[in-house]
Image (cartoon, rainbow, N blue to C red):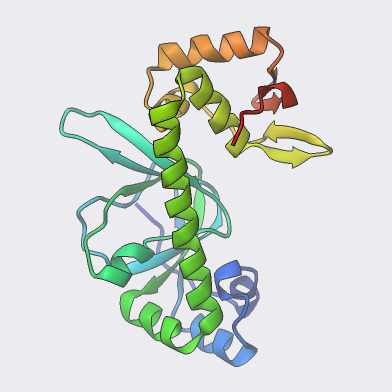
Amino acid sequence: MAAPATTVSTAVLKSVPLFAGFPDEQLRALATLVTRRSAPRSSLIMAAGDATESLYVVISGRLKVMMGDAEGKEVILSLIGPGEFFGEMGLIDDSPRSASVIAIEPCELLSLSRRDFKKCMAENFDMTMAVMKGLVRRLREADRKIGSLALLDVYGRVARLLIDMSEDVNGQKIVTKRLPKQDIAKMIGASREMVSRVMKDLQMGGYIEMRGSTIVVRDTIMLPD
């Protein structure tokens, strides 16, 4: 369960890409509307099918967006980190939550009510464009995932995920965030055993290097676009 809400400073709001274009006067007004909450690891932030009441912005920590069925089978749609937001789709089309969001680390979140979200969208063009770009990015990611599932084998899907999750660190592609094999399996539609086998083969082939909880992704793993 999330901790009680606390007040938000304009400095915190200005550090959030979604609100970065707000003038100071609007930031001060927004600070009276936004609430800040702490959420412990494994806490459920929202559940699929729930009524959509708020937009959430991640200040710190990571969360997973997922779907499940009655038999307990789960699929991870995406991972969300600092600066990103979620929950906007239902606010735009007035539909229930389409997926569940669970904290995989302790998180700090900002929330903005449906009414205030729509008011901000109407009054701030930069925020509207940021929300639109976020929706387009997720649509492109969904298209890419569908393409990977249809066109790539498990080796290719693991390789694609590692490339997409990696960051440039001193000229090397490195997956800096902990990525359990079970989560990889849920993200690419494969079994954990198959993912373990593929990761071992990629490591033995020199395509990846394990350094503690981080993964170095070699250029030789690169896939054609």
